[in-house]
Image (cartoon, rainbow, N blue to C red; front, side, top):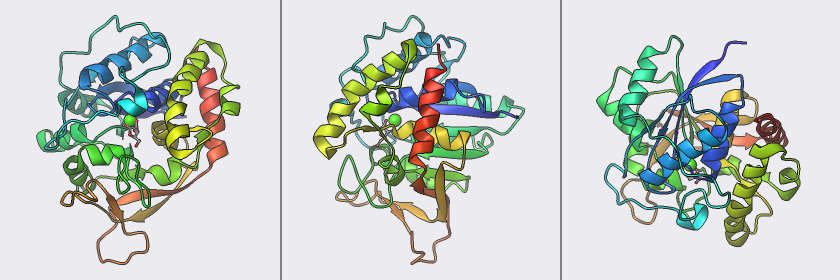
Length: 306
Ligand code: RIB
Ligand code: CA
């Protein structure tokens, strides 16, 4: 089996952390590195969290590069109500022992893409600031494919109209969807259909499984309170899982435009689902998910980690 080289650009964040563990546990992909961005928490905290997860799971060989500490234009906004003050509230993870590399994430991404012998898939699971900067500063270093967690056809979480990653930096998202790159959008419409319930938590095993259970114990409180969910959407892990097995998420090629003008609908991904415009399709938009298939894969892979 040939492995797919991937880069994960993230804002850990509980679901980012689980997405990272899934990537580390999956032979289908080769993780070339991790870059971080401000989003769920400040850049300092998301970077520390990425390193903490790598150190906890024994993957200190994977390098981390810190990126943008705020959106292109908008004010920084953190989701402490969802992920806590540390960004990874719940488990008592030790502070990071190491530092990120000195290189900025955008330059790190460019270098890894240029030096990879096989085409690279970039998996952004936070605001798209780093990717927008990569497109602007290193136009030659283009990933073959982008599979991002973000947006929604018909939902919103940070506002009634928009999903958090896109809402944080709508100008960055607009550049990504206008880039002409092969973009797959894994949005709330699919991630909200695959909830990690207590029954799934009960099947987690080992020290990593136990740590994930502690992450979900904290992360689940927000989703129970706000949505009445009896389980948590592991948004970012769905994007990674789709790279592992493209049969897990059904997509349609559609046009997606980003509202960067209005306040009411700031960051909305306007998906032309029924082809009502002449706008050309520019993304593979997730419309359905094999929830059981995703959840079983995630449990199996998490339990395979030592
Ligand atoms: O809206 C969910 C997304 O925003 C996830 O990536 C979560 O980690 C936050 O970044
Ligand atoms: Ca995220």
